Length: 227
Image (cartoon, rainbow, N blue to C red; front, side):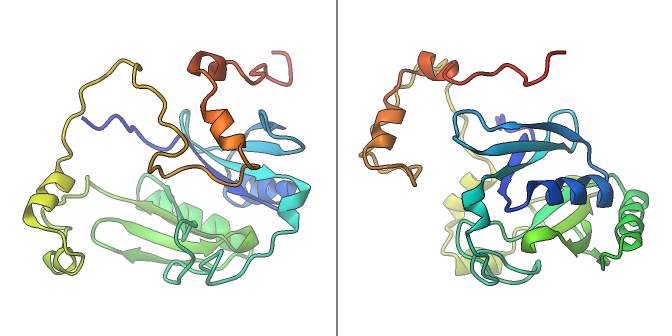
């Protein structure tokens, strides 16, 4: 059974934390939930903006990020139908309840001088599209019912991707996993991975070799302001 229940947070790098907070609170109406020094990361700020009680959009900022250039068609797509590099965010879609909420968000954005395309009826959802700061491409969407993979998995695309009938059946209904109760040992740094990168030489291997019970409490989890 799939144990993934939704989005907890999506972390996005920013060169201007205040501007992003301003955009997402005033233009979109999200609530600032948290703004603090990122745990275990030197000179880096972290913020969370509320989607619901369990889901947030998060931003990460430090002075070095401000110096990293954005390149449309590489680091950022520029619109919801354009290209960006593998592994980067092409666009970000937020869920709303229904048509009324979709038009509410369109009006809110347009009232702030932000052009909005849509709604567009996709069949599996209805969406509006607009630009965020720092070349982000954003969307609001809703679906009236769960997406049915019996009608929304195109046989032509399946064939072009070289997916066999057996593979397709497995993709539609992944095999159950026997719970190991947290007892599976940490893979080594030389296993196939994938692995996290951008660590100093040798640091990654040291980090992933730290015992799990030490990792659990390795950062200060105390809120910055007393309740």
